Image 1 (cartoon, one colour):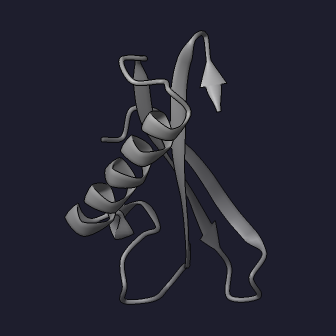
Image 2 (cartoon, helix red, strand yellow; image 1 turned 30 degrees about the vertical axis):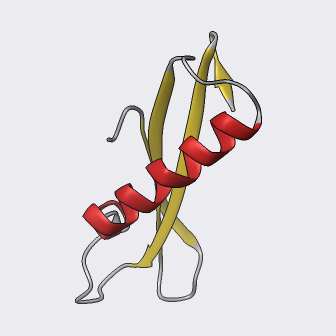
Length: 79
């Protein structure tokens, strides 16, 4: 995505509420951050976009037990 000239990479995570695994946002750990950044570098190189300003956002989706959407949180500049 692009936002005002900034290339935005978005990681979308979901979790069912009431589980012991933490929230959707908490599931974005160091390993996932490293993977997303690495994939972004490959994309930027392939598209000849090196040097462009980039941002990494997280969209965290919390689901109810019936899998209905309980909450959506868009965290801009998450990492």
